[in-house]
Every structure is written in structure tokens, then in C-alpha cells.
Length: 85
Image (cartoon, rainbow, N blue to C red):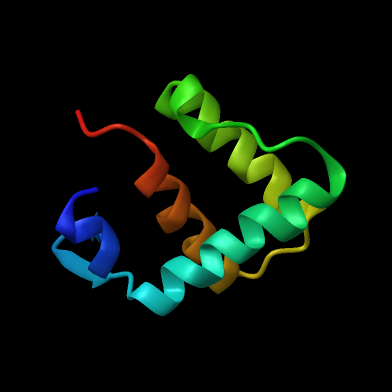
């Protein structure tokens, strides 16, 4: 596993950089294995293209009742599951 995956990953939004800490990634993993798995099997994000995955993430955000922070944590975590391009 790459070092940046264990210490956090970068999310670039315009010129703003947000770094997911290890705690935030752990929170994202907890959401993925807890809330997501509560209703369906865990789908691996690497099996979907970015557009399809983002579409599912948006649909599931409201169904799972995720707030913006939880959604960001989950998004950051699943990004670590996708192979680098």
C-alpha cells in the first residue's frame, strides 16, 4: 500500500486542498462497512467508472442519511480502494 494511503489522501477542489486524516479515513471505512453493508453487499468501487460510481454515491447519500462530512469521509475512503491511474 502506498504511504499516502495510510496517512491520508488529497482531494483537490479548485485551488483548495483538503487532506483526509487517518481518523477520517477510518470513519469512512466504518460508514462503508456499517451503513452501506446494512442494506446491500459491498460493491467495490474499482469495478465502476468514475461517472457510474459518483451517480451511485449521490443516490445512496440520501438513502443512508449521510451528512456532508460523512459523505466526504466515505468518498475519501472509497477513493483509496480504487487503483491509481
